[in-house]
Image (cartoon, rainbow, N blue to C red; front, side, top):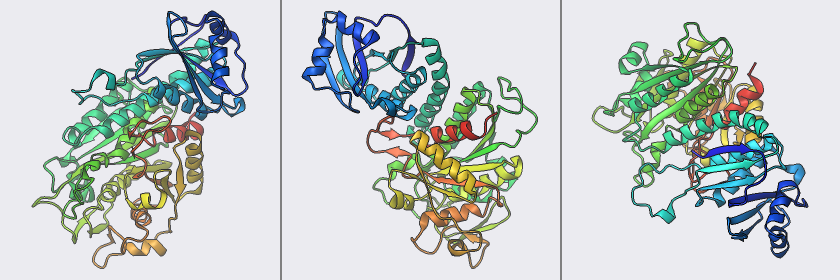
Amino acid sequence: MLDIAFVKGAPPKSGVLVLPLAEGAALAGPAAALDKSLTGAIKRAIAAAEFTGKKHQKATLLAPSATVKRVLLIGAGKPDALTPRAAEELGGEIAATLGHDGEATIIADGLDPADAAHLAFGARLRAYRFDKYRTTQKDDEKAKLAKLTLHVADAAKATAAYARLAAIAEGVELTRDLVTEPANVLFPASFAERAEELKKLGVKVEVFDKKDLEKLGFGSLLSVSWGSAREPRMVVMQWFGASGTQTAEGKKTKKPKDPIAFIGKGVTFDTGGISIKPAAGMEDMKWDMAGAGTVVGLMAALAGRRAPVDAVGLIGLVENMPSGTAVRPGDVVKSYSGQTIEILNTDAEGRLVLADVLYYAQERFAPRYMIDLATLTGAIIVGLGHENAGLFSNDDELAAKLIAAGQSTGEHVWRMPLAPPGESYDKNLNSPIADVQNIGGGRAGGSITAAQFLQRFVNGKPWAHLDIAGMAWASKDSSTTPKGATAFGVRLLDKLVQDNFEG
């Protein structure tokens, strides 16, 4: 975790200094004072490098004094274009550039306190790393950035603005940690234990084991786990931020009032089962639990910033393995809803997990909205690539709110078609021997028929499904996300809650 501090006063005259400059901006205030102390070295460097402050532009002064190691000039772009999102991207770019420095000071006196906070937030997100299993890295290969001090005009306001963002960052980091863990470490039982740690934030956490799920009648979810030695779990997390004061242990007897329900697919490893996947790339299936990881991170963020909202998070946790006890293509199981499902492909397992959890969520909590997240289909990657998550919804208002939250946070969603029950795409799921089959007819519209399957278990409740298969893992670095687990959805859904459901 990157340590962030905001201070006011004379800028330091030692160490690594970062100076963000907007296009056309002249050196002023602490930046001008720093330049004076360096006998005009910054102005000379700006002229020599033809530095204009354009976005992504950089210039470096090496050892301009006996105590200043270097000064990094970085372009902040046009002054009127510095939105919170742009400030986060600037912070991420700074963190990436400083990766091998232990600490640095950013001279940000010219920024509004809120923008300074967002800059720090972006830097923290970009500085994330997962090194717990590395034992042979050389010192010069390690990312070392551990502390950023932001020199600002109003340290108190910047610190207050950053406090909420820090809670979101902690949720993002938690999700990234969960998604990155190997499947021999993170399996249903150990994942549930990690979720139970949210009790420290005041979240009420319930864990349902195999016997509990059998008693409930979760035949659809349980069928996915038949082939694995790892027993399944369901975790229910409740945050009572609007209906009353939460105790430290999350103890609350009454139900949350009109909560928002977030449901996550948690397949901790997916071999495909009997319908086994190709060997190449199967290692990626450790992150087939990314939807559940996002829900846990989101609940941590909401609780961490004491969000004034009632929210519930439910995750279904299974491991999908082939064995002599595994579910077979052609088997029929009975879901918690009472509907029977003919399983034609055991690699279409995430929807089997979500079917039971979705129905349980709306039956137990009567939420005003349900939103599920799942790395559900490869088909969504074919359609949308790695730029947007697929959004399917039976509610136009909810869909519009999600799209707006995506535009604000940079976690974009693209609305896909969803037919009413019994029409067009939905007809492809009719089974000749059961109430529904778990795949449609052939490969065409695979992400759509998967969403149609889920819709059969929401009872008309306002609902959205986010297929995040193309967004949960990044193959390269981006502005605020290093290569690896992205925690896609934590910022998106926190923004959705903040803008629409708090108070």
